[in-house]
Amino acid sequence: MPGLIWLVVLLGVNAFFVGAEFAVISARRSQIEPKAAAGSGAAKTTLWAMEHATLMLATSQLGITVCSLVILNVSEPAIHHLLEHPLALTGLTPELVAGTAFVVALVLVTFLHVVFGEMVPKNIAFSIPDRAALVLVPPLVFVARVVGR
Image 1 (cartoon, rainbow, N blue to C red):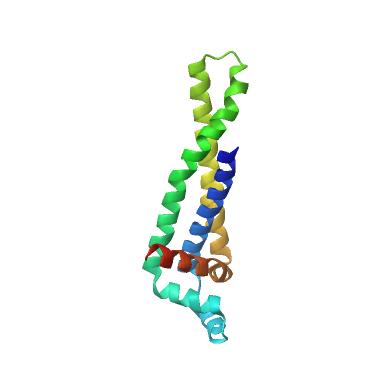
Image 2 (image 1 turned 120 degrees about the vertical axis):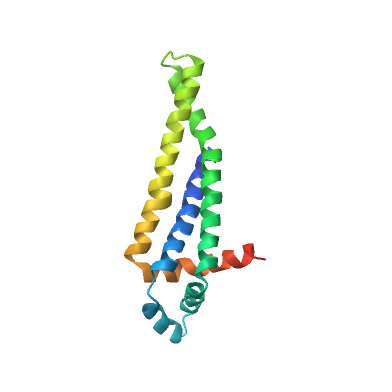
């Protein structure tokens, strides 16, 4: 069960990095600048991030890569374990049970990762780039500063 909880958490973290990455590159400076001029801290941070896009993209890619690598490692064993008992009831050999459970777990995790960890946050960031940037970019800047130290 902890592996499934980690799967959900890591998909969420991956989605954050993907959304933040696309928000940085798709937000319109002309929409953010007035908010910064009005005193919005999130807008000021977003403008800083837009000026340091290379650092923001590198931070996003690091987060996405780490999440992607860890997602399968923590979730596949949990899903595999959940599938073993029902598959064993089919009368398959232990080798076929293990192989089938692995393939099903791999396909399921890959699907969840592509859809919820990549495509959904990317589409949201593209559809509302300025709002996404104001929400997602300040935490991304924080991560970049923590990792960069």
